[in-house]
Image (cartoon, rainbow, N blue to C red; front, side, top):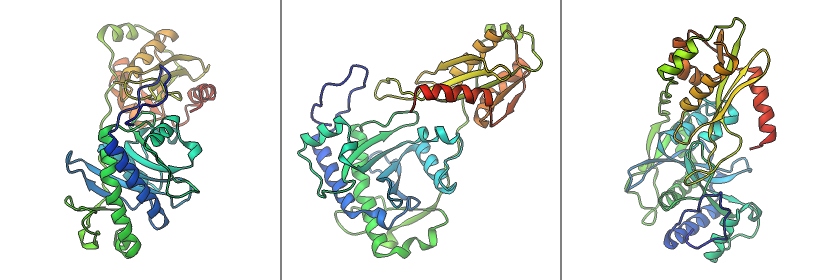
Length: 363
């Protein structure tokens, strides 16, 4: 926001600054979008493709509201955001890859959501008051809330660049929505999974969008990048190799997002967490929060693996994981330790321990 807000708690990152000009333009564009209410005739699978004129970044817009629960424009960015959105659309609402409980943490987008006034944060209220803002409608979910999401990050206030991105997207997505309202048949031949890209030079302030302007491309999610492998230094590996391998010792090992956010440099974030549990006893041999730089969790997974084996005093007969991604991360180090890795979607001991922890710290 461009104006100061109330004093914040010392453990919270500062709210990014957005210029007065951008802030006012964003509120005006959001009001126009809210009055248009494109969710009345558009579905979240009607994806709008844009190319930002400055950054040249491809942006994918999706409108929520057809189910009358959330009313918003979500603008997905970067390969991570595109992959999450397209996989979700193509998989009937499931983004794939991670288990459902963690999948929402992988989104990468900026958005405006229209909500009730009681849902506004105090920083939202302060920013809207500083702009002398009141919604054009008096009932329903009409107050605009602007947020930025990054993988692993807590939904946070937008930066100047992010605000400019959303300001660029709002009137262009609205232009396509007006075209769809007038000509709903435009999408009829593209319902199997196409994205409607607008011309790079299209200016909604100069003219209305036409059906022949649209450039259609199939939804092809960017490939999932290979995760960083778990590695152990030579000294640690040599010490662990001296441990006896215990028959019947099944080590359940997993990485997941912490249920509680912690402070980051620019926003709160949910750190990747690793946990190791002995299947037979249910004893937690290792638990640790990762660093912000450890995006895949390879570092924290290596630490918990080494610490848990020292704690138990044995190498396991088998390491059980529930995600193929974790199995790939452990493949090399497990071979060095002489321990096979097995996929097991249940992990009863670990998930029981995790559920108990999350009951203490609800998301």
